[in-house]
Image 1 (cartoon, rainbow, N blue to C red):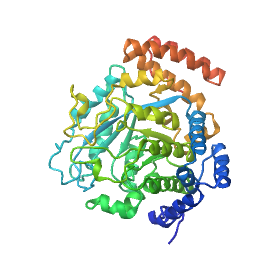
Image 2 (cartoon, rainbow, N blue to C red):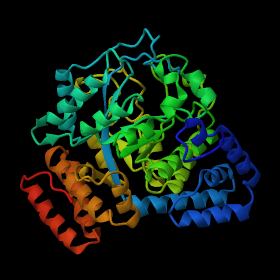
Image 3 (cartoon, rainbow, N blue to C red):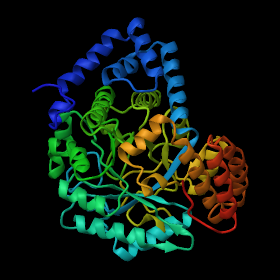
Image 4 (cartoon, one colour):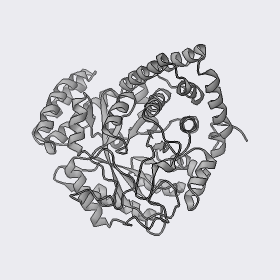
Length: 472
C-alpha cells in the first residue's frame, strides 16, 4: 500500500503518509525562494499546481509571497470566471438522521432539535417561496435515514421540484447533497435529472474521521471517501467535494482535498465541478469551542487563494455560514458561487420569521436574495442565475474543455446577463433593478464574439418584452 492517485482505494489516493510528507516538505521549504519561485512560475500558467506545491505556498509566511499568491488567485479567478457569481439556495428536505456526527446537530442522539420531514405539498410551498425570491438553482439537503429519507423520497422530491411552474418561476437545476450511496442509486439520481452531486468529506484524516463519526453508516471512511468514484461510474458528470475546515488541522485538509481533486482527474479525466469551503460554526447543541482546529480569517482567505491557484477550473462555493465581510473578501480570491436568502431549517422558506429550531447551522449572512444581488452588483460582480450548461449537456469534461479553452465566456457572459435580466424584470426591487440595468448595458459589450453579442442584445430586448428562458 502507498500513494497512488489512480487507485480506487481511499487509503491509497488519500494516503496519510503522503499528506504528512507533503506538510513536512512544506515546512522545510517555506523560506526556500528557489522552490517558491518555481511554484509561482508554474502557477502563472493557470494550469494548476500539485498538492505538495500548494502545501509550500500555504506554509510560507513571507509577506511578499503571500501578496503574490493573493494577486495570482485574483487573476486566475478573473481569467476563468470573470465577474460572474452563480446564485443558489439550499433546500432542506429532512433532518432525520441515523448518524452520530459530533459536529452536526442532526446527530441521532440530539433530543433538542425539532425533527421534521417535508411532505411533497410542503416541498411545493417551499419551492414556490424560493421561486418568488427569484431562485433558479437549488441544492437539496437531507440527513441520512433509510427509513425516513429513502432514495425514493429524494427522487420523488426532485420530480416535485422540477414540476412546479409558478408565475415566471422555475427551478432549472437541482443539485443534490445526500449521503454516500451505491452506483445503482447514483444512476437513478442521474436519470432524475440532477445537476451536481455534492458530498463533503468533512475531514480527510481517517483517524479523526472515525472519531468524529462514531456511529452510523457514515462511520465507514472508505465507503464515504470513494463515493465520488461511484457517482461518476453511475453516470453523474459533475461532482462537488468539500471539507469542514476546523475539524482537523487545515494543512492536512488542504493537501487532502487537492489529492482528491487530482485523483478524480487522474481516473475520470475531469476533476471536481465544485469545491466547498465551509468552516465549523455554532448550531443547536454544537459549540465551536469544542473544536481546537478553528481556522482564523487570514488563513481561511489564504486557503481559498491556494485552492483557486491549484485547481483553476473548479467552481468554489461559500455558504451563509460566513459573514458578509468574509464573503466579500473570498469572492475576490476564488469563490464563484454563493447562496442568498438561505434558510438552513426544514421548511424555513415559508416561515415569515426565521425559525432555526430545525436548522443544521446558524446563518451569519441573513440578508434577502435581493439584498445580496444588489450588494454583488455594487461590488462590480454579475449575479448569475444561469443553468444553461447543465441543460445543454455541457457537463463534465465537455464543460471543462470549454472552460480551459476560454470559449466558455461566449456562453457564460450572455447567459449570466440574460438570467440577471429575468431576475430584474420579475423579482428585483426598484433600486436593484436600476443598478442592474446599468450593469447589463455595460457588461454586454464585453462578450467577445460579435454574433453572440448581437444575438444576446436581441434576447435582452425580448426579455424586457416579457419573453423568458433564452440561452446559449
